[in-house]
Image 1 (cartoon, rainbow, N blue to C red):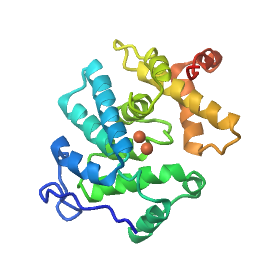
Image 2: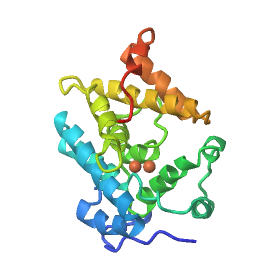
Image 3: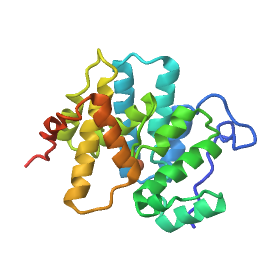
Image 4: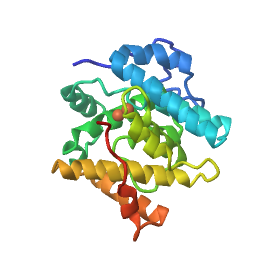
Length: 235
Ligand SMILES: [Fe+2]
Ligand SMILES: [Fe+2]
C-alpha cells in the first residue's frame, strides 16, 4: 500500500496527541503536497488556492477566514492520488466507515480520506477547514462559507477547469452580496446534475440535496430554468 508520507516538519506534524489550534502554514504544506500529488494535481491545488483566496479577498473576509480558506484549498485533494484500494485500506486501518452512497461514488473517497489526513496528520481542528475538504466533491445542503468557497474554486480554477464555465460561474458572484455565492453554487450544481443525468450516472444523495437546497436559497424554485443557460464547453 502506498501510505501517505508524514509531514517532514515535525512541528507541523502534530498528530492526534498534540492537536494544534493554529493552521499549518503554506510553506509547510507545499513540500508535503508535492510528495503526495502528481504534478497536475499539485498545480490544480495551487490554482484552487489562488482562486479561493481571490474569492475570499473580494468579500473582504477576516484574516482567520482567509487562513482557513488557504489551508482547505491546499489540502482539499491531498488524498486524490492514492489508489482506490489503498484508500479502502487506509479507511479500514483508521476505522473510517464508508457509507454505501460513497461506495457507489468512489470519487468521493479522496475527500473522506483527505479530511482524516488533514485532521490526524496535520492536527487541524478547525471545523470549517475539515468540512470544506470533506464536502468539496459532492457538496451538501447547508454549506458554510469556507465550504462554498472551496467548492466553487475547485470547479473554476484556471489550471484544469474550463475558462468559459468559470466565467459563467463568476458572472453570478456579486461582491456586494455574499449570498451571491449561493447563485454560483447553484450554477455549478445544475451543471453537475445535468452532466450526470445526460450520462445516465448515479447521483450522490448529498449532491441532490445540495442542488435542491440552493434552488430554494436562491429563490428560483419556479424560475430556475433560467440557470440552464451557457454551461457549455467551447467548440
Ligand atoms: Fe477532489
Ligand atoms: Fe480538486
